[in-house]
Length: 113
Length: 112
Image (cartoon, rainbow over all chains, first blue to last red):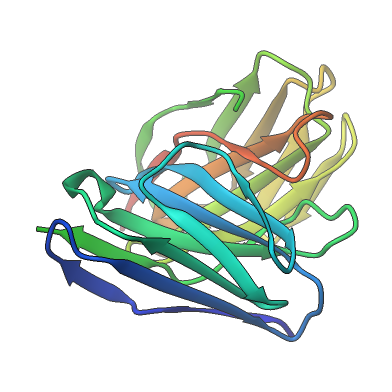
């Protein structure tokens, strides 16, 4: 069976500090990977998605960037956090090749102070 | 992305009651998905629909892909306290690639 991990679970960072959130998937190969942000417990906003190693599509201009250094690893980064970057960050995966069912990780709660 | 209108925004019901919620889009979708999210956790996929008119059940949950392909419905029968959470619809149009459009969610509260 497939599992998806995110860490850290919670993070408190000062404004202007860097960010690195990690997501890994087990039990599948060549997944599509996604980063979402959820504000105030509602409304998922797609930030980035990737269909393969090194392939990143950005959905919304952000203070954030994403990278996929390995097949089942997806990283969300920022060089300098803003207050508005606070939120609940969710990673998700779907099977490649035309499957649209996305499966979410447990999320990371980021608070920028 | 395309905005989905999900309603109602919240529901407060008694245990044992049936629940209905729906999602509409201004454009045609090829895929409808329904998720449930518990507080502080990631959404969990409940039901996936791929054909207009399709009716699919998962235990006490039943979802339908609207005939017009612009809407979808989720029903929960005989609600129980653990049904509490936020329910999201998500849809995908033919030109959306792998991206899903999410509704803003229906918050469900169930009293014993």
